[in-house]
Structures are given as structure tokens and as C-alpha cells.
Length: 149
Image (cartoon, rainbow, N blue to C red; front, side, top):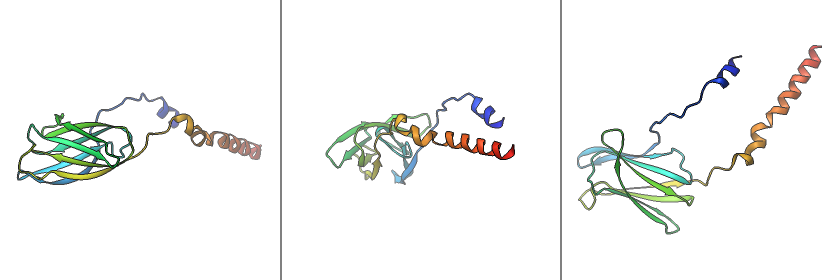
């Protein structure tokens, strides 16, 4: 009964910030941090958030070992002091990220690497491992019923 009521609950997507803090330090004598989301990046949209002081000319640059290079400016986020840059990553592998929080100013750019996984497989390729338990439960219930009778 409890399981059935859990399955009947309406499902709604909640908008929330999430991710992994990949760098913390100081820039312009104030604390700063970099958050990458999703926490386990895969091919698709990856968001890099800068939390701290920044210049309007600030930008993020991502480079893949294969030579692909992308650049993005930061836009204001919902939280004061947080700025986000988004990238559409199409190639899995290691990507080098460089964030220059003050454009061409004196602050040293922040550098780190992220590893991007391949795309999530289609659910049809996973149906056997996901639903293999169904016949096993049926066999177990039948065995329990036969033993009880």
C-alpha cells in the first residue's frame, strides 16, 4: 500500500542550483569559487558558475585536447554575486577550463580540468537490466504460494 501511494505522487521538476565546487580562492582580495554543473558532466549543456567579484569583460574558455575551443561571457544568475556561462559540449573527454574574472585585468585566470562523459544511452538499451527483476519476483511469489498451500 505504501509503495502504491508513493507511485501515485505527482512528479514535478524542481529548479535548483546544483553542481560541484571545483575551485575556491580569492580574486580582487575577495573570496571566489567556481561551480560546475551537472555534478557528473556528460555530452550536452554544461554550466560554469563564477561566485565572486568580476568585471563585465569576464569570460570563460573551454578547450578540448582535440583542438575544439569555445568561449562564453557570463550572465547574471538568480543569486547575487553569481554569474553563469553555458557551453554545449559535443565531444567527451578532458576539457581545460580557463576563467578570467576581470577580462584583461591583473587578476590571474583560474584554470582547471573537467572530464565529460559520453551521452547517456537510450532507455531501450537498458530495459533488460531495469526490468529483469519482474519475472524473478513472479517466480518467487509462485514458489511462496506453492509452499504455503
